[in-house]
Length: 64
Image (cartoon, rainbow, N blue to C red; front, side, top):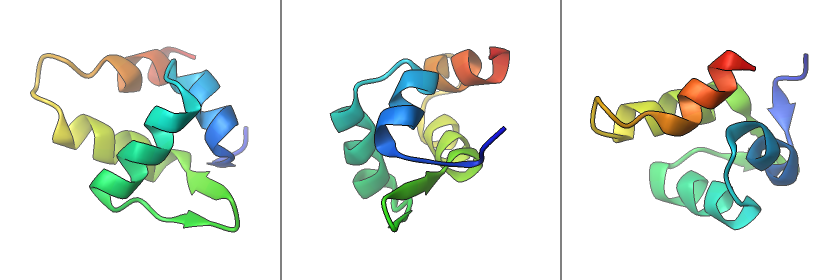
């Protein structure tokens, strides 16, 4: 299982749009290096930024 994904691949796994993934990276300071995003860092950043009851994207990826 790959850990560094393109925004399109990460969006597919997280159930988000590609543009939303890129916006979240910019907003949360998650680096995009050579067109790839660290999935673990992205999901941890998203779940830490959301209120405790609404970690939808991280729950979807964790279930996959």
